[in-house]
Image (cartoon, rainbow, N blue to C red; front, side):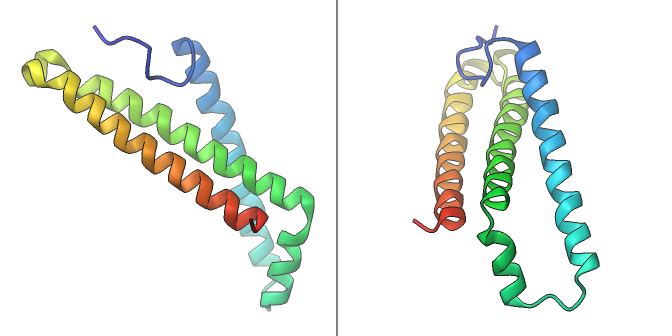
Length: 122
């Protein structure tokens, strides 16, 4: 049996809700960026930079980054707990799952910090 210690939410329902909300944010950001690129065919670097100079755009981008990280974490946690099971892997499943989750957590934290640095220019 897999415990819920390493998942993001406290229950499957909470994880499901986070997945859906993060998917809506990701979809909204994708549609916005695609529309911006389509309706600004002669986009210059200065226009692109001006877009990201707005506080609302930085917040929207930060929300999208956090949504991508949480969405990926929950999805990958689900895959790892489904496919790295004791029944399929023997006694090594718990160790492999823990190592994979630690690696994914390090990647997620690295990408989040790097993204925040890029968005806010720290």
